Image (cartoon, rainbow, N blue to C red):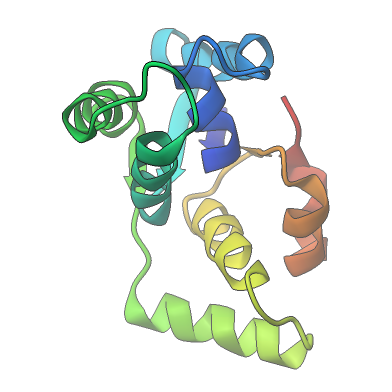
Length: 144
């Protein structure tokens, strides 16, 4: 099975003190140590870094620590899915035709990356947003 993990799942899976850690971590562990293939949208690498470096936890995570977490726990173990310029145009056209605006654009990019990579499942805490941008793929989208 090919499983794309969204930023909203990756962040709590890496932070033990996060309230959703116990729900999210098994998903990352499943694709690291199991027969399933883990996927991550390239955009999510930057999102995870941005989120972890500003997460209001004590002690805070330094940029160097976050860089290492991203490299060792995401980039080195998940298949990174890149979008081409044509992919971006396709997503923008899809959003425009469906009158979808604003921040949903970023959700659409992640769902499109999953579609492009042939994901069997997309795991996110943003169910409503992800299902809204690509309703035809709502059956692939689940929460931890």
